Image 1 (cartoon, rainbow, N blue to C red):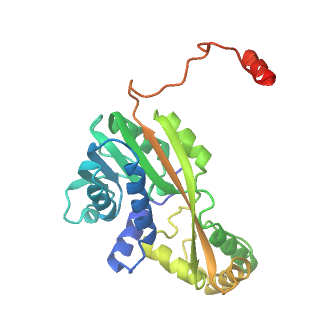
Image 2: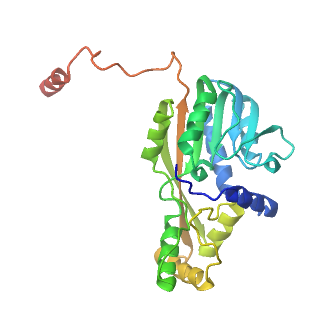
Image 3: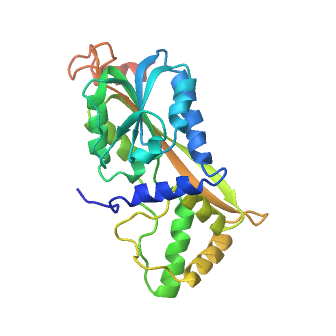
Length: 290
């Protein structure tokens, strides 16, 4: 397994963001937490025991508790300080402290994109679910921050003659659907919601990312400060390529939602090969004659 992220740096950046606590910086997390509750409202059952994986703040757990769809909510965090005064467990990197078959619902919002071993986490979550338990997650997917990536790449190439990795790689929705299947989930579903956010300039976007704890954690990043000229040039390119008529610039967040169920005999299953009562040729002939 290739290790993309520097050990402990994601947690360090989140700690700094929590300490600074900029007003409104959690707008994206609040949005997906609201969407989570909306999506759960369509599921015609209640979940006795739920877990929130690396919510970073109490926000997601509080949204679940207020939804009326769950009983107990367990928080799993990457650092003890994130638990505040809540009871919960601490995860060691990609290893999740779950007992097999102990949960009815597991939720993960805006953290799996920074997992080195997403397939491993999905397998652990599926094993932690009781039969017919539900997993729901949202993560940043392919195309997220594409504007910022392009402008930083162009500016650094112009000024430095080369470029370093600055935006993490994001998974495509088709790949995520396949990961759910390989992890053993039944009835896997993945879809994308595109959220556009506007800023006065590129630096407004970068301030929000810093306040989210979402700045560059890649192992291959530059280990020394970037020249100010690179960022100034990137801001110019951003304004040239991605500004609206009023001068404000656009940033894209492609949010990939995924869900899957722990297998259970009551779930609908596809027919076994050869079990059909009519051949494809007969079906096509019948259609042509209609």
